[in-house]
View 1: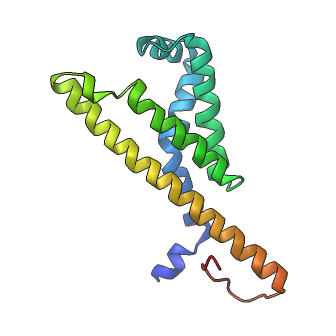
View 2 (view 1 turned 90 degrees about the horizontal axis):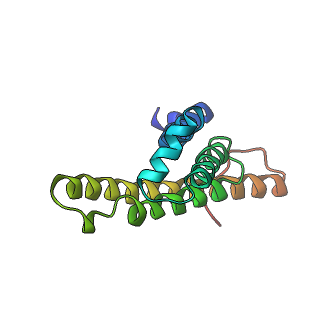
Length: 150
């Protein structure tokens, strides 16, 4: 039963949607309330804020779409991973804050590190699945593919 869940394509797509929710949710919010997104960029000292808001929307929505549709997953995961890593020193710099703000920023930064790990993992799994598919196609096999990287 567990194997059938873990190999189900619908479950895989749902997992990709859930994994990328923080990115596409934020990207859509910044797109829908563009001026709010610009104000957020300005609040964090990112200048010019309009350009940073546009870049954030493109990276968040584009990266999430690549992961969800499993096309160039490595690129989407890489872009979102770099973006997420950059938010730590730019926005969540707990080492320079005091009190409750420092604690909240620290927890957010550590969650970001976990998200980066998950993004690396989704890229690894997509590559393994791609290699297995290519290997199966080249061998002309119609049997179940292995998750092996060899």
